[in-house]
Image 1 (tube, rainbow, N blue to C red):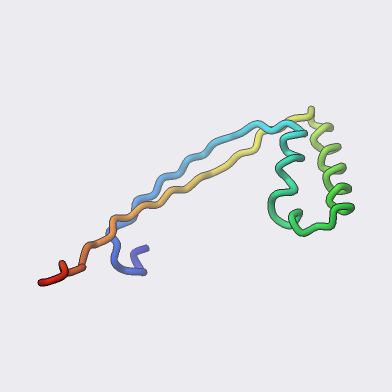
Image 2: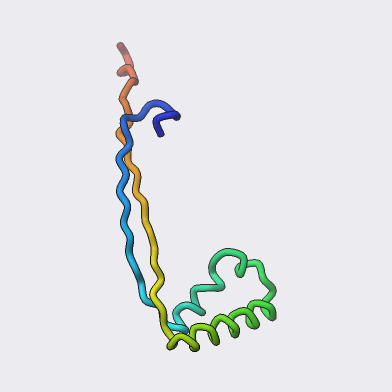
Length: 84
């Protein structure tokens, strides 16, 4: 942000959080992200079957950890009012 110019000193916040997923919730979400959006349906079904079995083997649920980073900066107002 500083290298782009036009902004003050950026501020950054980091939030670590966790969300529990059940097997079914994870299998519903998985095909909507990443490479699985481009995998043919038959291959996708096989992958989901194996992922489901892996989740079942650890009790049918698991926690997923996330980190969210927020960055803000105030724009420097170097503009001259029109008509000046």
